[in-house]
Length: 333
Image (cartoon, rainbow, N blue to C red; front, side):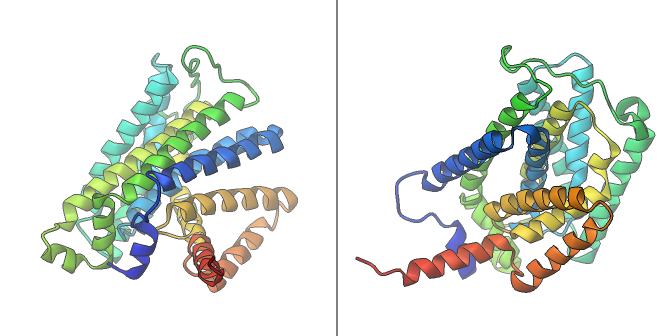
């Protein structure tokens, strides 16, 4: 296992659950800033949180396991459609809908993971694209379940705990999504530092050495894909619950490619990097597209070129390296 892996993933001495508590407080503080500083943009911030789940799920399979995939949106979109249909059928409890999204994502993750992780390199990437395109095509054809090109609409979730109704200003949606993100982030921080998470990182670094110590890569990669599906499914469920509409863009190749860009921007193999990359990219895209609706893609492309040149491992690793250097140079008492 590499030195970098030890640096980021092995628990350091300190009080129990130090990283988990820090993660919970960080999400809560940043979320509170967004709520009070941008009260008119809560719908957009809620969407940012939903897509962040998809980026985190991609980081689990690509950053921590080294699986090349461009079909992660299939897990996200299928879960969103499942939640939408369940809600239309009469299951309106938001917590139950979240569970349906997580279960659907897990099933999709296990199925796609069982196929994709059998291969390596370019065949793996091509197979992931093929699965994503197959799901996208089915979503377009099965209009009775998906609404086809018009999208699945009429999704009206009930009150949370029977008390908190979803309002037109997205206050309830934002808080509900933020709390879900905080809980998932805490669990993932613990999960990636567990023996299973560290073993997956070891398989990524040297699968032959992992096999020599008795760790078979294939079943563990499939299991990680299932966990990734749960996270992506939660994001898809939140998207369906909060917007009330599920469109073909939720399973599109463009969505998969976009979240991969966000992961590269933040830094693969680092949950904080994935979180930062998702938030920074979407906010930058939102601001630039509003300021220059005709050439905003050019500015986004320039940003990505600058990041890749000056921070090839992503913003998360660069910031962590700078902080480590600062800590080492700081005089000790």
